[in-house]
Structure formats: structure tokens, C-alpha cells
Length: 155
Image (tube, rainbow, N blue to C red; front, side, top):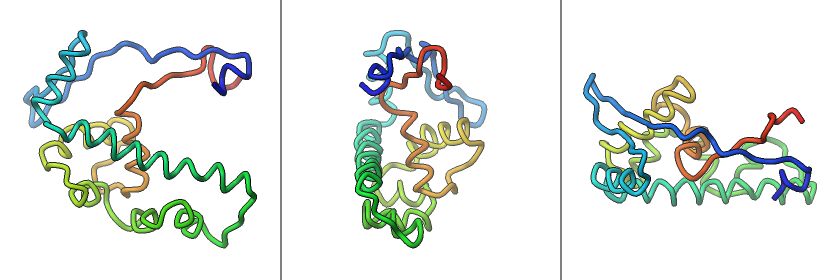
């Protein structure tokens, strides 16, 4: 990959556990055994957890088109037009809250109020009134595997 082409190494994020509480009650806790964690997630949130992966993944893929646009040296008179060139739905995401966007996408209120809210609150100190475009980017940290450059990105 890109990091390796620069002669650098990646490291996985720390193996850590996650717990969610709601009104002082523990409602979810991961396990050190990944398959058990996935089963617990499915039990608690149903298919919402799988749909989140797809929803954020599609968003990220559309946003990644920005690199092709930059490589072709296209110019736009404002950022909204740039976003519209990536996906016609992106500009409306600037006017809508993450909660509203996720509700419209069919995620359950219980799920939205637990996992996405927890992630946005911890990472950004915000609630689900955060803009849905920014929020969708922020949720990418909740899915997939994260990594860092060994020794730091400053190299």
C-alpha cells in the first residue's frame, strides 16, 4: 500500500474493549473474543450494525472520488459544487443533522442513540445534531480496522 511504498510500516490500533452506558446503566460491552462481540452486536442492534458498515462504506467510496477530481485538476467556484460533483446527495447532507440522515436511511432510534451517538460524542464532543456529512466521516472510525504509521505520521 501507500505507506509501504514510502518505506514505512503500519501498526494496528491497540486491542481495547468498548462499553456503552445509557442513563448510568451498562447496555453493551465488547468481548476479547471477536466472534462473541459480533453476536452481541447483532443481538443488541440487529442488522443496523451491518447496515452501518455498508452505509459508511458507500459514503467513503463516493467521497474518495475527490482524488480523481483533484488529479484531473477540475476547479469549482465553491465547495458545495465540488461535493455535488462527487455525489448529488452530498450538498443536502450539509443541511441535515446526522440523526435526521440516519433516521431517513432507516436506522433504528435505539441504535442511533447508542453506537453512533457514543462515537460522535467521544471523538468530537458533539451530539447527533452534528452535520450529517461530517458525522458520516466521523462514523468511519467505528467500522473496519484502523491503523497508524509506526513511529508517527510526521515521518
